[in-house]
Length: 250
Image (tube, rainbow, N blue to C red; front, side, top):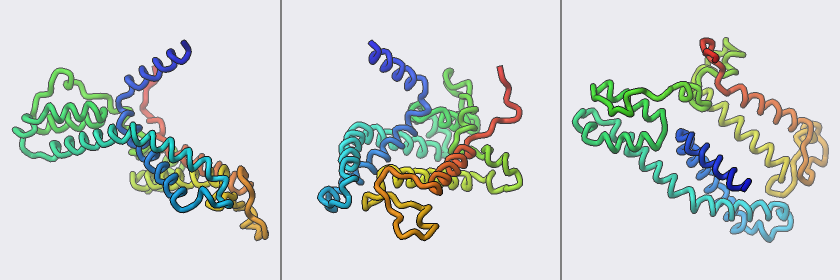
């Protein structure tokens, strides 16, 4: 009963959040492909029989199996979304009002699947081309969520903490910080939890101090790595959208 209830709640949450379908499918597909490639390369390059990499064997097999299952189920959906987005962009690039009207069903179906930000683009095109939207499209979807999306946000907590650093208001700078911090956190976490290619965790603390022994069996977290992880996690959190000054509360 509990499992059935949890499944029902999960399905309801998924149905209530259509804007998450495309990005979550895309990210999960990329992770699945990456995991599968890691597992395949590890085995093909002899890692499974290398005594020095024995600690990586279980996780590599897990990556191969789970990644393969993920690819089997997710990639068809991912390619469907890619096709829908390609169709959407192709129609949106049209300057011919008649052509857009002729293909409006394709356009609207694609926007429905891709999320509210795409619906907003369709309504913008309709206004520009003076095309009357269908009844269900007459009210523009809320753009609050879209404006405050983490990835495309240009008003982050960090930009408010450091208001004189104008580049922080730049979307490219904002996205670069997210990418660099996320990759760094992932690398430090993996290094501390499962070690590197040699199956050992390198201590940044010992490297800085010039110690002769800087490798330890995982899991191992040295003080400097811990400080870096804390700093990078805080920095990543600071890239989240800041609360608008004029936001109203109920």
